[in-house]
Image (cartoon, rainbow, N blue to C red):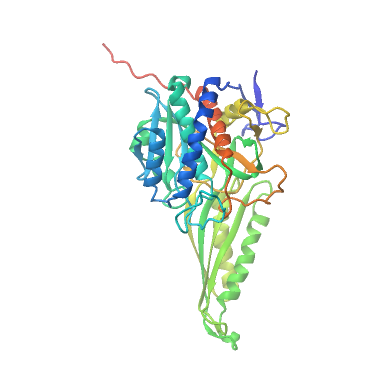
Length: 434
């Protein structure tokens, strides 16, 4: 049977054709082996959650993963590690993230963070524990159960620059495995529990930081005509920036400009000489460069209209996460059990092919480097919870329950099984001429 993906005439390829793929059954032996590994994976999740490590300080977390796998990890990107299962040839790589956030946890869990100001409130502990469960299940059944070798990549520094993914893709050790494709997964409170998303094209936005400085002329608050007020100017700048997406971006494309920080002045009765702001510019399928150019234009001209000088510094960060069409279709076909169906797939999950967001993830560097990639999203929102009603990603109280380790692991396992047969056949080694 051939499955058309996505459903209801949803996202299509650039040429307008519906992507088609055949489902690949997940071997019962793998599903059984995975279930046997889940209790240990939950214990690992607790251990990682209790002792979180910030970006660049993940060595302890990496070592905990190695102990859970019962294997020595090959180093990658400094504090990361990799484990390969299977023979020679190109490998299917799967990523789990090791780092936590600089946030004080407010979950009330029995296994809450023991490190002040550091917490796993983005789900990385769940992702990593799930990948360990999948890796152990494949090892237990035997790597030959998969169409291609498996490369489990435990990546550092997803939450901060310099990006861990950007370092992984150029690491000679990673490149030596000839990754034919890259898979990732993220828990997602914007999706209902029991739903997993796999769709082609952009699924997470690019994200660049902007730093704005408006320079005016300082003076006494009672003599504003003697000043050129940078506070008033930067207030106008912030308002004007919101018109870029509203009036310069195709409304069928997604982008967002957010100003999250403004600083100015030292006293209430003094007009300061400068004011500053910081924010982010995101583009899902909108033109990233065009939005950034518009930001600079708006800042400079709006500041000038107030007799001030505006300057913008762009700090490049992640490109958009773009899912490979063929891989996303193959995984969606295998996941089956579409959202709204009465019966779920053998993984216990239902498929969504519509979800995408203006969140960002350094997973984007894998596809940007030319490796076909797919990021899955697994829902965590309780069925009766209104959208946005539960704590979201990076919120101090965000914490998926332990059963999510199994749901994420089942989604990953289905993706691994489905992706292998869809990869192009490796080129044969050149034969020596006698």
